[in-house]
Image 1 (cartoon, rainbow, N blue to C red):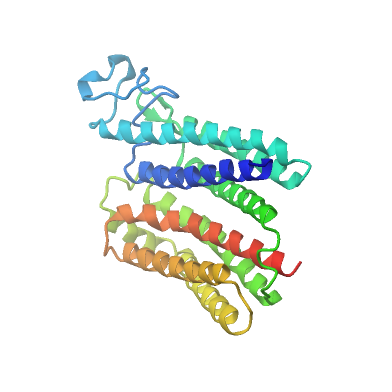
Image 2: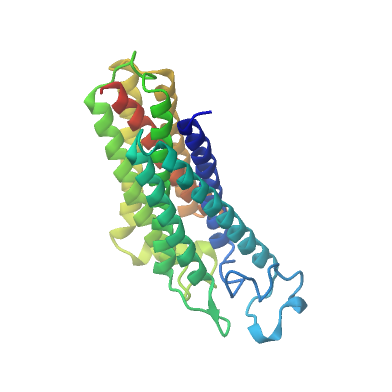
Length: 317
């Protein structure tokens, strides 16, 4: 097994772990378990979370009335540690492909750096002083943005490693420049969706509102935020239109590979699912826990866009 193959295998495992962590991290926020382990890296001074409320040491002045949140947060940290080790190993393997492609090395280094920063911020978010969380909602959003940047960096680097192993994989296919432009447009629209969605989450999860029912909080968002409330759905439906045009264009105006065609279809389906979940959340038709999947789909869409764009680009090079 050559160095490039070893790097790719390590990197693809890290990508999978990253997506698992994004999902678990969203679950932590939905269940409001982020401060259920008030110290870091331990949990209530122990390497294992408490089994009952009585197991919590008195000096921690616990504020929660449940212990399952501690296990959710602890599992989130455990996945984060495994991800960090995997990313460190991937970076180590990138030394072996430095001469082949320096971008693989620098991309791995950037991904590792972002994961370290995200882990540090996550630790700060979990920190409590006398039972009170010391981190504001906008800091939680920053944590999310770093996770998105890590996803972009790691997916790009991993797929670049794959294309280095199979440089002629798209040589028999052709795409117009319009396909690349549409993918870039969808990419940035998705980032705008993440930013505006973060604003919505910050609003409805505010400490002044979090005791209210989800539907009431969402109603306040709709009635009290003016034109801002239209930005998120407008970006979503614009992204859907662009993905539909991309699908039709690749199908009729290009000579795409089956993989690119499948990626285009998955992007379209993922955006449709995201919009359906978002509108159902907006009108209180489904439980608020579906916010987790709504957010996770954004990271999935970003990954699909990056992979599709790289394959289209290598076909025209």
